[in-house]
Structures are given as structure tokens and as C-alpha cells.
Length: 426
Image (cartoon, rainbow, N blue to C red):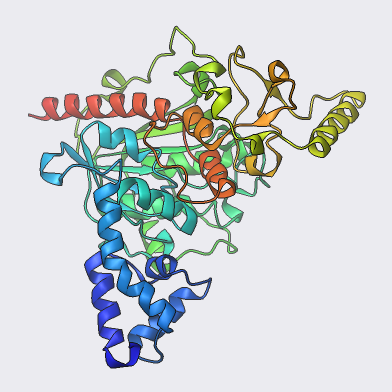
């Protein structure tokens, strides 16, 4: 019975044991948007969980153990690692995975979306911490490398391009806060290619100036940042940086996904190292894969992924209307012989129009990619669990994720550069 136990003490100790915040516990228990407040009330003794929620809480210890034991991408002990890193704006771990495979150990993760947290938990056996703006720097472990695919909607072609005036755009300042206080040896950031030209280049210039320590900022009064983040902006960084737009189709994945990647090395740590001579961006692949390489066999495609007759008629009508106006908007059809697909987006779950697979050989209407094909298109391993959440959510997650083959190549270059720099420091 709930009333016979010291529920507040039990819940607090459970959170401590499982390394969970109140928001993360609320997500696991299945509470709604006010769940964090509810958990806070439980722990303060203001009220007690319902019998159903209490039963769920009692299951968590064993459930989290099962997640850890069964996670296909569980990392090795830190004692066996070659370096440490943190995974910010982690999504479903697309940036983390290559660094982990190359000998790194993730010591902190942040991701606010509860559905992405669930997929991350199932695959890595770890529950990410939530909103980075609510996490003190002192609660983040020291690390060698900071990774961050910070939110891109504020800068993207599909978004409103509001940049720093969008709360998602201010997330870069959280990265600056952590860099200023934790001083990692290196970082890798990822964003949409439109970031370079946003606000006639002024947004990107602000970002690079901050990273290089050349900033004297006068922020718009409408930009809301925490006191700790504002204080960190007064601390000058000193990173050597390089950036480049890379396309997934040039690095082993049949997708026309172009993203900007920013690499940095701490010049206060690596004193007098000429990074211009020891760091280089990965070269393009000579051999190209095709769309057939990411498709599953026709026999393994559920009929539900074939679009409806009504949706197909609507796609064709809209495409013809755009054609009559002289533009090329509308659905895009691909087959196994296609060189690459369009970029998969977070809105793919809506109608799949940016990537439809031709099924004329089966006398069927086109179909959407299956979740497994979306995983393949982004380069995720075959044992990556894709059914921890609904199709709608996993489509969003893969659309928001990264091209893993590109990250793997950059990670190789970054780690090799650090090894070379460490040798030169001796």
C-alpha cells in the first residue's frame, strides 16, 4: 500500500540510484507536461502517487537494469576508454555512436524530448538528462570532447529562420557556457548548412567569433538566457576552429543531406600547435552507394507504408499545379537505381512526400520508407532498436538525426588530430 511506505524518501533515493532528474522520472512513470511538479510534490510529501503510479515506480529499478543489460549499443567501462565526451542535444545518439565506437566513453547526455529519451534509453541503456538550460555546469562531468548537434530549426530552410530570436537558436549559448567552464580539449558541432548564410552571415560570424574568443557581444534584449549562461559569455574562449559543409551522398550514404560541421581545438591546452597543418576534413568517397543499398526486400515491407489512393492523388495534383506555375515543388519519387534520395526531414511522418519509393514493379502506388530504411539511410547499425516509440515519433527522430558515416569520418580525423597534438606537446 502506498500509505504504509515513506514514499518521498523512497522516490528521492530511487532517483539518486538511477541518476535521474525529476523530469526524467516523470517521463518514465508516464506523467504529463506537469510531471516534474508532481514528482517534486511527491518528494516534498505534499501528496502521494496513485496506486497505479506507485506500482510503476516500484518497477523502475528492475526495468532500468533490464534496459542497461539489453541495450545493443551499451558502452564499455570508462576504464577501457581512450577519451571521454559529452553528448548535447543528443536526439537518439547519432553523433555519440561513432565516437563511442572509436574508443570514447560518454560521461553526460542531454536531450529534452521524452520520445527521443526513450529510444536513446533502449539503445544505449542510459536515460539522458533533460533540458540543458536547467542543468548547472557543475552537474556536468569533466570531459575531453564536447559533441552537440544543436537545434537547427531556427536556422533551417524549412523553419522560420529566426536564429537567435528563436529560443531554439539560443541553445548555442548553452554550448558556450559549458565550453567556458569545462574547457574540453576539442568539440564537434553540427547544424543545417543554412546556418552559414543566416541573417546575411551575421549569425554564423557571431558563433565563430565566440568560439575563437573574439566576441564583444551586445545581445538583443529579447534573448532570454540564465544568469549562469550570461556570466559565461563574459569568459573568452580560445579555440582554433574549422568548418565545412559535407554531403552524406559523398560519404557512403545515398542521401542528399548537407550539413555544416564545426570542429574546434582548445588553444589554451594545445599551446603552439599548428592545427592548420595537422587537421584535415575527410575526403569524398570515390565509389557511391545507391538507394537499393538502404532498401529492405519487398517481402518485408508492410502494406501500411504504401500511401493511400487519396494521398497519392493529392500529391500528383499538387505537383502538377506547381509545374504549371513553373516551379519544381512536389513529391519526389525514387527507386533502387537512384543515386540518392532527398534529405529526410523531421516532418517525414506527415506524408513522406520528400522521399517516396516507386512500386510500379509491384503494380502498387508509391510507399514511404520504413523506419528500418530510415535508419539505414542515416547509417545506423542494424541492431539499433527502432520500435521503442511509434512510427510517427521514430520518423521525426531519424529526420532530426545525423548521417553517421559523415560523423564517423570526422570523428576519426578529430581523434587523430588530438593524438598528433598530444605527441607534439611531449
